Image (cartoon, rainbow, N blue to C red; front, side):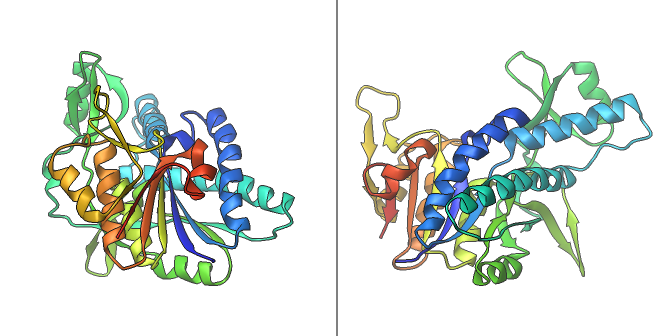
Length: 310
């Protein structure tokens, strides 16, 4: 039975450098093509941690080399990352589909995500980006309004806010492309963070919480399934302890209890489980799957992974 599926690709699906990304996307495209070959409508959501960090570093180095060049805002860095990651996904996935006799367009939508300007995350930025700096370099850049945090004795890194997404601004475009039979790459990196100012959408210095953005995207598209590919095969409780237990299936209520018990690490599995249970609880029949990319085939056949459903 054909499903509408949002596939959220973690960092392991994209690599950490451009050469790594090219190889990773080739492999990832084969898995995505399997889903499409079964007749499913697919929207691809991806992270951008290493990529947006590289772009931010490159733009910062340009500013150092030529102070006439301003430091590029984080919103623009996210837009750049959407473009070049989307380009690779479009190229390799379309080629993989053609090998299978499927002539289906793959389109990347440069996507803005509206956030709340009063989100508490703006007062407590915690997301590190860019290279390590000396104290002197950090103090100099602080004069331009940037914030920095010392990182385990290795130097100082810029930190930005990670607000929760409120609305995917290009959702109608994404929906129209899906209805036209296209595969869509959208909301990469959580989307370009923007706030509404009258008739305008203004970019802000932040990175949108990616797991929650994938959930908002999936709910907005009335998707049947949200698949979150991450670095482990299944979700576990008592992770890393002698009594660790891998979880095959959870209801949203069971997942919420484990969250309340502090079973999942913040900044790691916690937001993924929260996004998955939010999506699964939002409408009868919806389900979320969390698993390792390399185990995608087995997980889709019910042989592994953690399913969250009512």
